[in-house]
Image 1 (cartoon, rainbow, N blue to C red):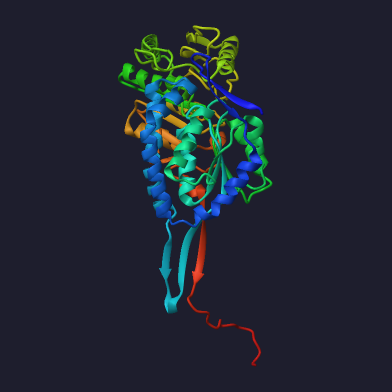
Image 2: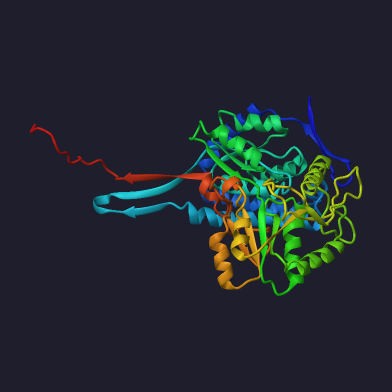
Length: 469
């Protein structure tokens, strides 16, 4: 039987292996369990998921350790991911009650109008590798609350984390047929997305895959498709009085998680001629940055990329920018050619005639110098993506101009581009999503409204156009 294996990016050691699953079997089991789960009261489902929180708390040390080993991110960051998994339940229960409540309006003679919400049925969840617990959990929890059953296919790069997550659901009392884990690679993912017996797909991943899924679902509008994709996110620095403070926000935005966040800053936009103190401050901060394995002491700021192919691709992309005329301001280095560790890079691409609009997923930031603030907004919007944008510096009036001008689903002021709150909607426009934001608004795509006009007894309807009888 074919197996899937998972390796630690920081060491290359084999971490985990398991047989590849059967798509038909997993979907059939989820279908078999869905109706009984949906017929339970919402309070029952909510209490079951609160027990899930307790189970995760009891296993949080092992879960954080597995996330750190499997993704390469520092242990401290893996611990914050587990905390987000725990916090998601209460936030989702509040969102479910707020966004999908039952509403009743009584009329004359016993007539009433009622709004209820119904689950879709069986939902497939395709998860990413950068947050292998938190991001799929952000789909699964609200979907379960609404009464759906789940077939979760994690990234083939982080299946060990996914297995622990599913074990926690089952240990908490979510029936095994209601949450299913599909182990496999791209072939299993395609088979699940195209399976005729799923009622929808909740996806987090690259724009390329998201666009392919959008095409695949175009001929079947009856199935739900929620796409959460990447970004080519701008961070604009304008009239910032403290270069060191601005640099710290930029470094957090661009290099946290080794740049492997969909909300990471990819483009730094600055006023031409006033940028050198900022570049110097970024350089000093990067020089102090610890890049090391997840459990290193002292604690690292960031670890490796997910694997060697990802590191190879990012190095190739940086070389293309330099060969096209980009000026390296901070050289991105690879200390060990056999491991996917990269140090942060910064390249001035102002003079490139045709700048690429790809999401370069890693610790590489591109600097663009512009003459005025209108040009800064135009440059921020010079992308097919539209996930996150941030302004550092300026006045409230300037931020108001930026807020209205920036085309993105998240627009921050004097804060990093990443680290969005689960208590707010999360999503973007363009190639960043399909107008189905997740986080607090995930309740919207996990159930659909059913409007009813009701009476306890049938009454003769008044009719016009009948002959006397």
